[in-house]
Image (cartoon, rainbow, N blue to C red; front, top):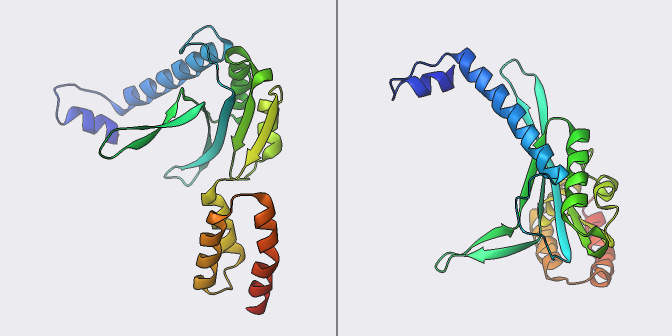
Length: 208
């Protein structure tokens, strides 16, 4: 109803809320059909890729309605690199990005698997996956999509790592947690991180 009103107020068009609903369903169906055609390789939306590294990221978005019912929109993005555009205030953009979304998690994963198979030489690629560790977004889930790649590495982004640290160490002073996260950002390899974990944990235990 809000959309119908927004269309009618500044224009001479008369649109009912039922028509808006019909259009939403029509466009949703068309979007799914288009995504399936792209995944099958029937629509070539970009030039063949010579990438050696491919990033696959996924997350879910919970949609709430007025009657308090919930649906989760699952979204996966695939890209080959990150570049900066603009001179004064450069912004980061994804290179050769492709986005897929669906309410049905299984259908989405199958669509992504087909897209990867039909658009990339996976045997020559290193797949880098990223998820927040929620249901359906852990390492095994991404491995199913990247199984044919030469190598698959799963990582957790800074945002979710830092969030988990703050939740688990909520009983510690904020100053200590902030300093720990700042130090963590300066470490460059796994060995350095493993060496710092024992003193961090000893300090955290002293606050219990």
